[in-house]
Amino acid sequence: MKVCCEKCFNYEPFITYIKKEGIMGNCSFCKSEKVFTIDVQDGFFDSKLFIFAHKFLPHDAGFELERFFTKQIDLLSNSLSPISAKELLFYLFRKSIGKDLLEGTFSVRFEDSIIRTWDNFKEDIKHGNRFGFGIVSELKELLTEIIKKNEMYLEADKLLYRARLGKLENSHGLPYEDDQIMSPPKYLASEGRINPKGIPYLYLTTNEKTAIAEVRPYKGKEISVATVKIKKDIRISSFNNTTFHGETLFKQFQLYSLTNTINMELSKPADEDTKYFNYIPTQYIGELAKYLDFEGIEYRSALEEGKNYCLFNQDKVSWTNSILYRVKQLNIISEPIDMSGTNWRR
Ligand SMILES: [Zn+2]
View: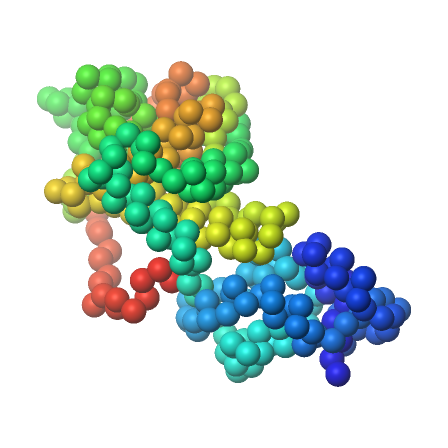
């Protein structure tokens, strides 16, 4: 019989259970000696881990399962070696994941019920109850928790970037500067991924390349790129962090699923003809963060490696300088769409 021990796990309810029900012995996985141990096939583990059954699919560009259950979901102890962690996961998930598969990498299928709730809310706020009063309280509580838990600061003196298509008219090559490239006045602000029409926000990125990609230029197009400086610490919430340790496994998985889904939607470029509707759910997220006294949000870029920021006002940001760029080459790689992978995170 293989036994695991209190030291194999980081998840408190598992540790408590092993200490209560286990017997003194040596662990088959982490090799600790004289610790509380228990049969790794104990039904208690199955009853807590069934929520993850059939959620993983082999995927070449995915993640390792032992990493997912250490970093993203707070299950395994950090001190387990990758080999021991794999071995332990094989026993814990023996009913749903083959041992040969554990050697590879995976994508995960998000927790279904919360994604359905989010999808219903998106439909309602686009075509039913526009100002968000139709939100179910469970969803609002989870969104609030995600925003509050992922508080971080953009620190004073940090440099960020911002791009605008084109250059100063009749200038023979001068980029847009200062007010011309910062957020537009409120009567000119058109809707964006996070800002409603008439409410200007400042969109920034961590590097020039991402800033240029985000304005989606074509080959030969000139783009003004500004460097801006954060003047004072800015309190933001990051959708790039998907760690919710300290919650139950189910709730961690729910929050992870919802955060990743919203992060993808924040970063996904919208089609011109449907963007008015499709921007509304992410505008709601921005409004909620603003209501919770955050000054902006951080999210990933679907177009480049850098991160994106949306700041709700530009008072704590100063323009530093601008450079005019021209796009030399766009690299387009395409493939037919595989519809079987919907809702799978890689
Ligand atoms: Zn152990």
